[in-house]
Image (cartoon, rainbow, N blue to C red; front, side, top):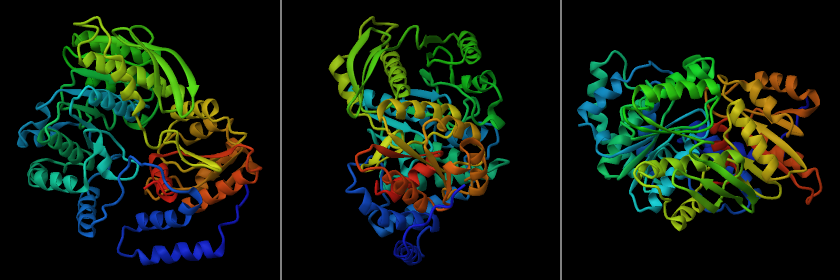
Length: 503
């Protein structure tokens, strides 16, 4: 296991000076933003971004930080008490805002956020006002609540929190446990959607289904993306056990859009659909991917929907998994509009093409730099890592790929590393700023088991890890096609985006 030399002394001095000057800021974010100033010059001018930066107005920024601090003082997203009683109580005192609009509800293990973004793009293209609720966020907490395809402003986020704060405190006082971070955010999203008002809400579960805080909506369309092993300590140790929990979003008379699943998981979903008289559309049967080919900036796909085929759709995302997400999203929107049930027709082809061409999914095989190419992907479990590895191999053709990996400690980290081993020439292990981050030495020990001592570099700081990986990639000739993939956690990817200037 090699110890990569850090960046130059002047780099370290500048970095530390900037961090020290940021003493009034959140310490973790100060480190990240300081690093972004030193690395940004190497990355070139950032392209158009779809992730909000910190508010420019100091007063708004201060107010947002206060809200973030109050939310952070609650139970985090990984500490759960499996019940919807608290969120139901909050919805009751708020006047049931989640009943003010129809909803499309999304569960699964991988692909939920990308699928939600595609569904949102399609609905918006058909001139519906949309609300989208997804988690976790890449860089800004405001990303989680979107209206009309864009994250709500910091001002609106703060206002929404202040509007429901008294009701949240009322529920806190009456319950055995206070509302969690995720429960309060869910209440904010549902209230913001009702206030907008939206024509339809696209809602991603936080974890599971039955007792997830989002599960107080009656989704007329329930979407289940591929199920695999993740959160096994809470959801179960087999796909069937996990599917049992996730099937809780399937409501009476709903339409279920079922992505390709392990056999035991599919059986659980189908049984639940029969119990509640839901209609099921299965990928590979009623809808699916007919054809796909790699294209510049993404891929060209032909999809079979519930009402017919949609040819030559450009999808500006990489990987076969994104094509399958697109098929699921299209079927979900067709089901929402009654295609396949009340009408045997396709949606307007030009509108569908326009919608898919507009899709972005930050942190999902996202290119943030050239020369060398740096790609970010939020894969955090073995199934996601396998899909990412396949997508990188197919779409980029790197002659040599350097990995930067920072993971959470509660994941199947060895399984993730094993999925990436065939495509990484070397791996730089590091840590993000989260308290959930795996200790770098523990991660390094696992990496040595998988990659061998000679292929592992240790850099505890993410800025140094990025610098080391870029240096390793640049050791090849400028035109040799080496690249860097940053992965392992949404948090790692979000912090790397800041460091590399995608603000």
